[in-house]
Length: 131
Image (tube, rainbow, N blue to C red; front, side, top):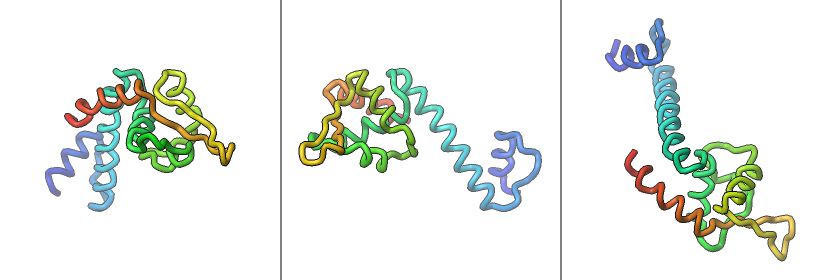
């Protein structure tokens, strides 16, 4: 049995060997993602936001001055967010995002990052790159 299997098994306290290398790969990827997510959460939470809020701000920064409709933000999220409106409510209350209804289609809401939100996301660039 390869050494990496034993290390992963020890790390997750699994007593039986993996049934296949595919199962081991899946568990390894999931474990790595969970470890990274915990670390990222610590970085962004120190700045008063969640990973999902960080993702929204990152998306809106990339959209530039044009902004994006709410559903387009939801579709671009790395991690699925059922409560995109709630996420935007919190970001708007903190002054990181503004929303406006479109003139041609009043049902559509465009979201824009504010200078405060842009400053916050820029301040996270260094810590995120250093991971």
